[in-house]
Length: 141
Image (cartoon, rainbow, N blue to C red; front, side, top):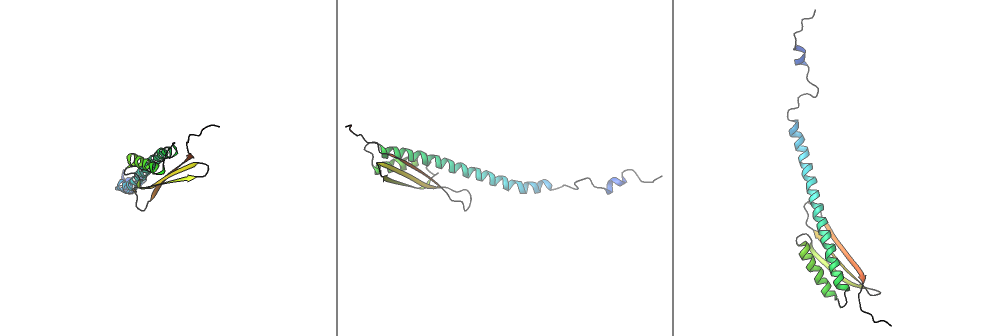
């Protein structure tokens, strides 16, 4: 007969996984920065999407003013810049608008600008272009 005391073997053997004191701290130290980076990337994407949408809308308004009967390049540029200021003030930095005429009575308006960066070293640019025929009254016959 064996003279082993009950519970004596339990002290010498450790439970599977061992001592896990402090493991939750290590998990937080690893997971929290990754989570913060994912949130920042999501916010950067949202800023870019809003700026892109505002730039597209501004270019559409400026293009419509350019192609309208009697529309001028100066008026179209002013409309596009004003729309950018209203829709995207702070979202589109250093906006640039260019207006041009194409063959066969077509006109083009394009705008671009940069988006404020939340991530170091990241430089995002938004741009949009509107091309269409001039709308002029033409007498028949």
